Length: 139
Length: 162
Image (cartoon, rainbow over all chains, first blue to last red; front, side, top):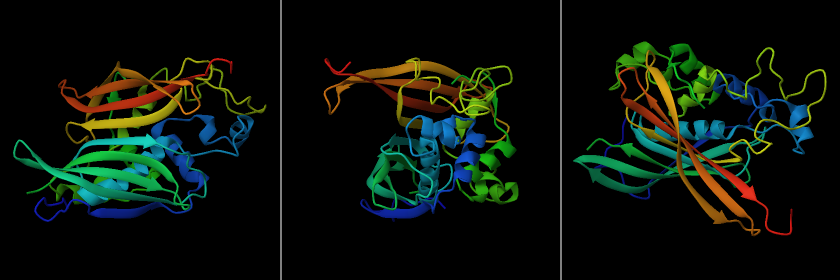
């Protein structure tokens, strides 16, 4: 279901837990699905050799999971753009909550659009991703 | 990442949606999807990452006969492509621009280009160099479907810290 411009308010937020206790297996699933097999995400020995405590999630997995909150809010096939900045690493065991905030509602060629701010935090409240998106609305 | 021919397939969309933990039926259930305004299954917003599978030279995939930098019989040294300065450095941002929904059956071709570049002074006085790596994905008709931009940042140590 798409959002309706007439019912949406600037400042409105939508929040979703997009992963609870991230498992190493999900990181492996993302490696397989995306084709990014960098061992720092799936090879514990390699990750430790680089001085890290262990493997960590692909930034694009965090962007993919945050995208779920975004499309759950705005509806399917409605995005005009989606931008993410990778602020901090995401580790196995992390629980991530994505928050979408309506920052503006505007019209472009007679079509209503929402500007959205995105922020994904871990279980300690630390930001791991910040971003923005635009979505086409129904009138 | 250059995938000259990236066929978008229903099975790959299903796997990708599972991997990001998104159970939305729009990514897998054709019957459900037919009843929506989209009229069919679409791909998730970050799906073009899977184009790596169709890049014959993608360096972050083990290939028979090619050295791989992960652990096996021997422990890995913790180095990989990019650590010699040839990579994008730190993966700072990713931007997508959507021109239309991506659907199974689409055959995309990716064209890489350099986007904007700029510099900033980091917190410890080193220079940060940002570079956009843009991929335009076009369909078989040549129409732009998705523009995907990676922002990479490389650091330069401040004088005296070399």
